[in-house]
Length: 138
Image (tube, rainbow, N blue to C red; front, side, top):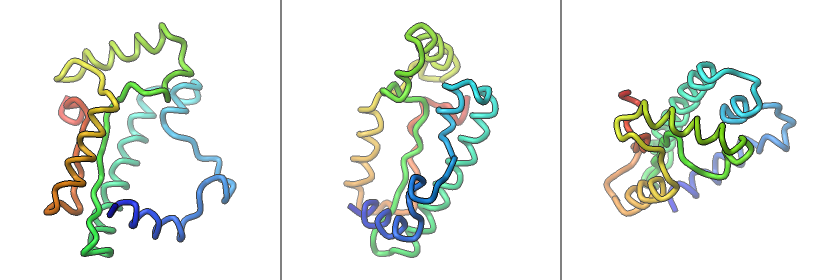
């Protein structure tokens, strides 16, 4: 609930991309469409995650006592990857999993558990939980 309240406040200040005519795309879209190689996307994703973590910390201070936290996921097997051909997607997941300490790709349930943890831990605010299979240390 705290995140939703914070997001509603932020969304009043920053209109959604479709309302401001933004041409921005996610890093995943750039990789899937071949518009950027994986190395560029990884750098962009790192910058985006750092900004989101800083936003969560700042909102936690500004909106206190409302709690604001963030979850920083690694590669998660979701329908966002369905645009890739099945074989290319399988190769990407296997290659990524081989580089992670946990040797697997995350599932939506992994993220849901992290969100539930933050929702039920009333002493957490301004925190970021990484759910990336150890990708940040790999």
